Image (cartoon, rainbow, N blue to C red; front, side, top):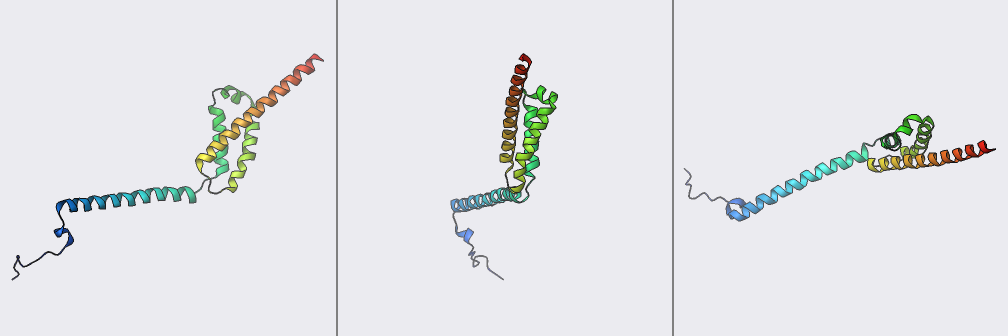
Length: 141
């Protein structure tokens, strides 16, 4: 028969004070939290890097959406097929270079598509003003 008084518990936790045990507990929890956060952010980073998307199509879609959402251009966009074809042509030609960049980030591709659409719209408007001026001058002759 084993005497309970003679059994000495040599574990580390039994020798620690209550405040040391609490500190050890919180240290373990914070380490676990850091591991979980590392896994979550690591997975999202790898997902964005390796599971890329078609940048050219995304750029084109965001550029067209920018033109449709612009309240100043909404009526003009619906009525002017020349504007639609011009902007889409510009977007297709300039967004095509994004298909060569396999790991482009969505936010940068989206902003690039919107900028291309705005510049194409401005260029089309300038061309229209030039055409209108030329038509006015030809009517005077």
